[in-house]
Structure formats: structure tokens, C-alpha cells
Length: 281
Image 1 (tube, one colour):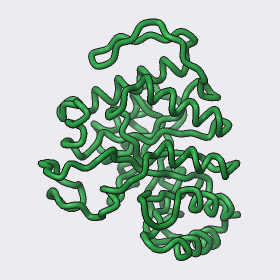
Image 2 (image 1 turned 180 degrees about the vertical axis):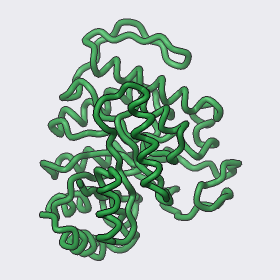
Image 3 (image 1 turned 90 degrees about the vertical axis):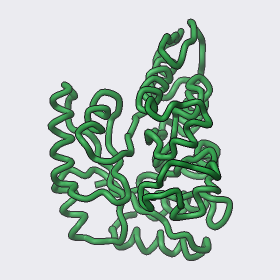
């Protein structure tokens, strides 16, 4: 099982560069950051964990741009995977986002993965012109358009939300594609979308019943004619060796550990201690 770190970035506390450098030195395999372009002050959308418009953490208001953050990380690391948990491609034009992601993948030697979400904050999506009831369709189309740009020397696309004629855009990602991981609740509807449009699943922070949900994901994956098995990235809390073994037996391929919102020296100590408990390095 791989192990990753997710840093809820903000303009305070430890920087992504310092956290990722420490994570790589401690033996972790992946580094994740989230995305919110902004948080509307007046919102109808309820946060999944609070059930209303209140936010569980003020860092939602303060997140760094994920691709700027990961570019800094790429410059000071050599091995660790650079990813998002999760980014919101529906809020960006796919031509420019494809260029950003491909540039980072090129400069990092092919280390980029794209964790995506549909977006719980429908008010945020609306400010980007995304109809709340079409967010899954917009995400799918933006991913399809980016994949065309990444894979084809002369890319073109004609969809409901995105249209462009034959175009050149380099650099290309090292593999002419970027793995896509969907972060969303583990339902049959989610897994159907994933089997059609993504390569793996990132659990939600409060996901339970993983044994049954991973079995459902494997069944849906096979029913859609996908080969092999999907990647499963589980968001972890406190270190629990028994839980990790259970997850591995169920088909979890990577555990991702959140960092505490504490001073930088405390976070660095946490990373080192966690790496030791996990036997990394």
C-alpha cells in the first residue's frame, strides 16, 4: 500500500514546499492539495460535514492555488507524486487548465495526477457559470477536452460547454495523459461515472463501510469493461495498524494522511513520526 500526505493549504502555517519536502524525506509516496477558487459569503449550499452553510475550517477561505503550490513542490522534490484532493476542473476553461497541468507534468518528469470533485459548493460553481444540476456533465466534458489536448498533436473538441477547432498545444504530459482520481461519496451512481471517466476513487473524509463500497466499485468497474482493478485512495485519520491491514485486504491501494493545522515545526515533527510508525523511508 502506498502512503500519501494531504495538506489543506492556506496563507498561514507550513508551506506546501516545506511539507512536501519533509514528506518525501520521510518516505511518503504522494502529496495532495485541495482547491477552492473562492467561497461566496452568502450561500445556499450546505457543507457535507456541517449540514448547513457554516464551514468546519476557515482554511476554506484561504486555500492556495493548487497548481502554483504544486509547482513549488515540484522544484524541491524528485520522487513524490503531485496531486489534488480535490481540484475543481469545472471551474476553469479546459484549454488553459490543460496547459497548466501539462506544463507541471513536463517539468516534474511525469509526476502529476489529477484528483477531481464534482463540487459540493454549488454557489461557488454558479459564480463560474456552472449550472448546479449539470456539474457532473461539465466536469466530464472539461476532462474530455483536456484529454484531447494532451493526447493529440492537433486537438479539436465540440461539446455542449466547450468548443474549439484544430489547435496546437505543447508541452504534452509525459504519458500523453494524466491519471484522474474522483473524490466523491461511494455510491453506485458515483462509481458508474468513475468507471466511464476516471482511473480511481478518493474516499470522502467520513466514508465508512469501505469493504462493501470497494466491492461495489470493482463490480461496476468490470461491468463497464474496464481492465484490472481501480485504484482506491482512502483518507485516513489517526494511525491504526489494524485498520490499514483491513483496508489493504479490501482493496485500498493508498492511504492519505491529513496534516494538523499547527505551527510548521509541529507539522514537520508529525510527518517524521507518522513515517516512522508506517515503516517508510
